[in-house]
Image (cartoon, rainbow, N blue to C red; front, side):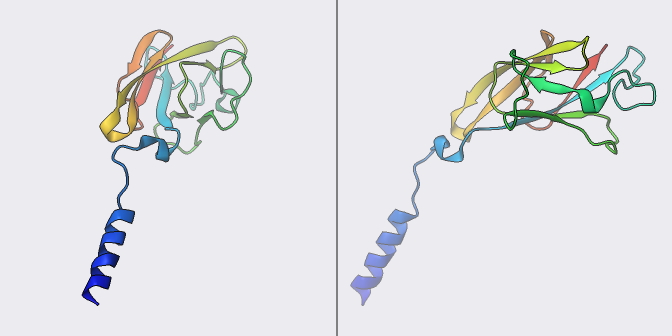
Length: 145
């Protein structure tokens, strides 16, 4: 009986082991950050009554300007007290943020691999200006237009 219990313990111990830092098992990493667009006086340009951008018309695309269904999206909540767009994306080098027919901004991304944590640290550039470093954790980029 003792041999049987030892055998079960060894089998259980071996089967419960997983390779360290096997990041591929986690699938593609998604990144979430927020964008707030204001004027020089701090007035919100998306969600206020004097807004110049319609949040329902804002789109995130690649350079073909086709929507990226499931790969990247811009969402908003009209009741959001912080008046921010939420960007959710997988790993891209550059994306276009189409604000309206006349204004298209560029988001450039750089990644620093953190192997022991199984994620990439994201840095975002908005129109070639540093938007935020380590944007992985729902940070906000404030853009002045």
